[in-house]
Length: 186
Length: 309
Image 1 (cartoon, rainbow over the protein chains, first blue to last red):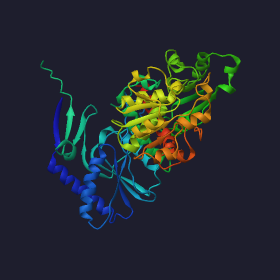
Image 2 (image 1 turned 180 degrees about the vertical axis):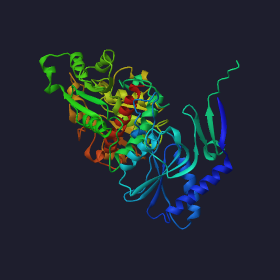
Image 3 (image 1 turned 90 degrees about the vertical axis):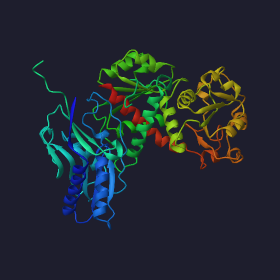
Image 4 (image 1 turned 180 degrees about the horizontal axis):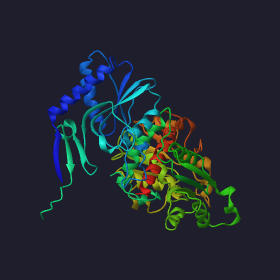
């Protein structure tokens, strides 16, 4: 196993700042805009973005919810592991709202497809935008793209992208983990 | 832990403490689902479930059917009274015929003790025991545990009294297994004829005085007298039973604490519990029914999620 850090604490903070300013360019007010983090790892990013937006818009109340997609997965009964759900907590109506959906890594796009299904069970939003910290653009299985992207990376399918958060893991960083390369000299 | 240790839910005796925790935890998320405006999720859309009820049921059957429909499963219902069982078909033949039509899961209630265990050795589909004779009723025990946990936050260390017809009650046996596995203390109370001998070996206390049990407990689970299973007279009359073993509002008010009242239903009002006690603010009888759907969704979801992996 080899791992290399692709984003460190400072870079992540800068990216979150940039994403927030990009969001606030499109959404001048948060009257009709709500933020929803996708469980489990999207919630960590969403909390950071909400905190930063609240700082940029001190007089607005930014509505924020968590969405769990376990019951909407397309690989239920097909994956080689069992799934256990996390909390869904959307304490407001999303009917006719602009929803900003947040996840940490956009990979195959299937999580976001499931999240869209799950979201529609709570009402009909006016529109849905997607924020991701990492876009692994070469591995998409469904036609889904993010509107706000932290960093785009080209990685191969066997590599894993792991996001660490200060709150949970003690440090903010993003790593790419790969199997060791074949050593042809041996 | 995110998978059950078992393929079937035959009884609480056959699952471990982690399984119970996982089911209760998953049920919490399903309770959120059934309180949404759209109470349905697509998880089990490719699963077909047969509900085989060889014995009468209202609550359990409706609860299972709702749970299945809210998980988007295809459901077929079968009741013995309107089927070829009357023509002399064996249980195994009936089930194999249903399975030949590509059914993935079986929910079964049967009057014979061990009927689901018998089937689990013979067939491939997942089996959920919805009550087998006087043996076990695991989903009821799990929804009772969920309801208690919801009320108190924790089962460990709680004192739960189970009152009434322990001998004929599958709810009692499953509850004893479930509560003791979760670290609660259990006391049984009822007429000596309706409490099996040596039941203390399951790690429970026994008393023949309802008032003693009420004074001791945090939660009282009151059971129905199962007249349909009583081949001989176990007590002189219902009136006498109600006088000595029935729970009334006055008895609850006389305690120096507010205990929680549960009942698995159907209630015989005025026999094991008076109407004012059953309808009092201390009763969580209807919460039990609501939680039943969420708990059964969790069980179906967890068993289905396991079956192909």
